Length: 420
View (cartoon, helix red, strand yellow):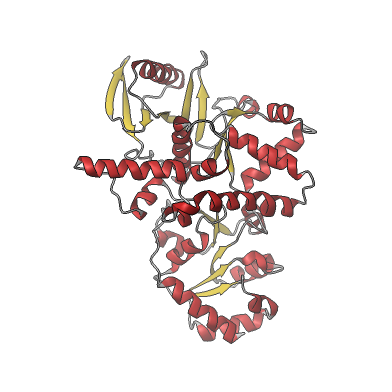
């Protein structure tokens, strides 16, 4: 056992020697480390959960166990493991358990370590255990760290491009890189190898369906699940309802559709945004807008006759809100006015509407401006909100209308309102 753990230490040190893009965690790393709770790192496939764990722990004395190792699993014995860890990592402060779901009965062991006062960082792949189930097994004992594909600021940093430009050449390069992000998304392994994007992301998407969902839940009607996912992909940024999906796809029941959508949500493939309403019952009954975790999956899998730039930008803006720590149904919604005018995103905090965000790829047309500004003004009156924003592709201005100030900002300069 000691030799196995020693070999893993060499592997850990080699990984720590590499350079990684820092991730935005919405909380200082020191605060995470000081907490005695289990640090549970969750997120979609290939988003960088293990790398995130290494970045969090890189400046402290931590022990490492990788359970994606047949030698460790075959010879696993609790007492031998703990003794060997102390020999290989004397006086370690933290213990990183990577791919923990591969260990049979991992929940009992992890909870035992927690009760003994060992400070744990735990990652788990969705291939055998969905993140929501991991959280259930650690109820009341964990601090969740959600890792998603790169946000635009992380992507620009990785590409060594600044959102602040001084020359036309710099501006052109910036817009080119932002356009890459809009179409190809932020999965790290595709950024510097665009030739593999479609094949790689197609395999990620298929793995979520077949391994994370079909195998885990023993689904027999695989074609029905695939059709639901394809329907959602084709209708990203559009309102959908379980009834309409069931009828259009000819599925057996609405409950089956709801169950499949739940699986797709748990596996971080899709998100479902509710329509804001003061009455909870009406909000739960309304159609929900569907978004996908990364724009690259849209371009890799969706059947599109046009580029749908406006919808791609809206999906990217939604994910930026999620990446910034906002939660669907808690402080993030969409809204329709009494006259059926729509606002893309309603941001709420402490039972108050803090900001309305409208997304418009091309804001230069007078007719488009009239439509978008009219919706903002009308919904601002109904929701009693005076912080109004239009996120555009490359337009920046301040507009006054009906006594309200509306900020138009390019996507690459837009910053999410902090709720802290």
